[in-house]
Image (cartoon, rainbow, N blue to C red):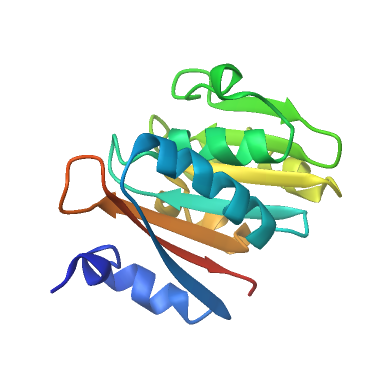
Length: 166
């Protein structure tokens, strides 16, 4: 199994049929992951959209959100931090309201229900980026895109599989 296939779990393979487009990307540094934010920001338009970010701890999910937020003019790299303990961070740009969620510490659908995720996605200019969202069926059901990230062969190399547009 190659590194690209390793990014796709059995459940992902089953779900990937729901998306019409797929793109594979590779970055070789943190700066490269940040720079991909511009490309991904364009690919993920128009909003509203909920994007599931998949990857192990340290895969670079928050770094990618930093790049996307900066590309959209919603926040600078230094302003974007992991919402692991706060669950949700909001960044407002001229055209997009970016929500960044980290559901790692949540365990039940009831906990998801009280976050107001449906209300976030319902905003006409919302881009909702959700780390660990694949763990919850309700989040998967709302998703219109997913980005799977994994470790490449080199220490800072990252492989990304982007699926979007149901």
